[in-house]
Image (cartoon, rainbow, N blue to C red; front, side):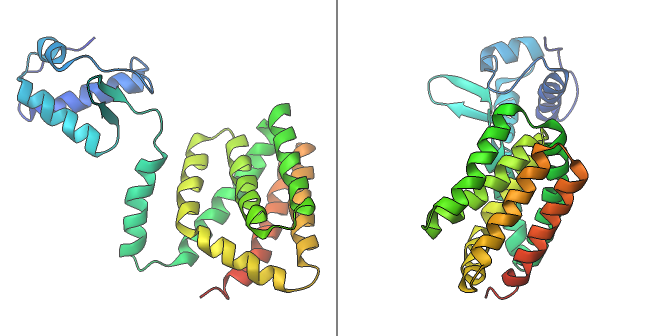
Length: 232
């Protein structure tokens, strides 16, 4: 399983072996790591080196320590993405336009992938979200439905990186989305336009047209972006 280590920077080599085991599929999400004593015996290193490696893996978010249970490969990494991205976002001047541009790149392509890969069950969920827009008068519910609709498309893309990155950057700008919706809905008829745009995205995905789905998403995001620019 593991191989003995006989070199400098021991803890880094412990990390590298665990990383390679994950890459090969020997260790998977949610798997429990061997005990510290077991790792010491298998890797032929000191307990101090093992603990240093485990602390480093916990800091970067690869593993989690469960009190009284041991160390586990994390099952979810969304929060791991959010922390460094949110700090970088603040350090770079908190420019929402950069996040919006990234979302547009991700969501347009996610729509095209979803049109090819969506399952019948996912299509039903997306249809229900689409109809929920026109049937609810509660804007708080509609704003949540709006975000859920976009997340669902990212999920249906079948690309876990797109889904997790979109969820992460969306957390950073959720209040901009909510504020932009308020500005959009001030204008009479815009609720119907928003429904029509979401419905067009859904219909394009339903007929499995990647080209139409990308175009429909691009039109929708460009429309929303006109109002987002008014958000202070």
